[in-house]
Image (tube, rainbow, N blue to C red; front, side):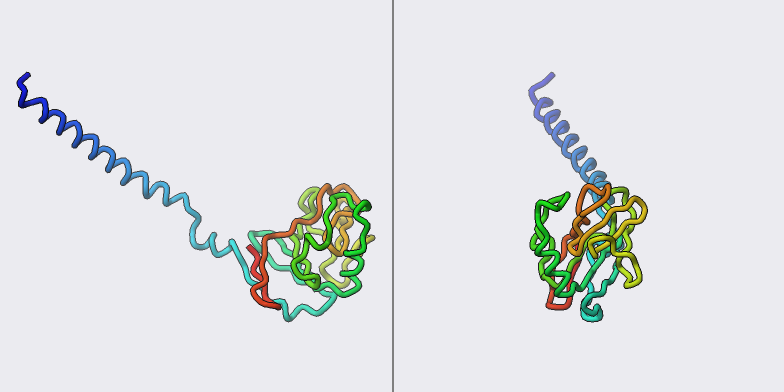
Length: 174
């Protein structure tokens, strides 16, 4: 092999590897981009709710990510009961102040933490259980006015979704 062919072969190898790398990247980028959530899924990632139509002592159910979210405009009596509950009486210990950003508004996922049922308590005619919150008739879980499990087989409190107050009467969940 002559001395002149060696640099030429190095160039051909380098050019082939570069072209192969560019080809692999041009295939990988669309493939990876296809794994990103679509615009319709991103739209479901958050929802804004106007709280002004909810009178004190009443609730609203909205759907977020396919799950019911309970929004309760708590009365002063409900707030007081939730705050005065003895911590040692709770199954899943959590202070009311950790579960709410504004004492008047409780926002929790409406899914029983036992087997995923939707508890009763949103309508004024529903049974609210022994503690004035929610009652899951499927297996007998009772939740208080802070969404904490007080009685029954459910191991955890109703989950608090991520949310922020955009204004005094408007929240964004997600």
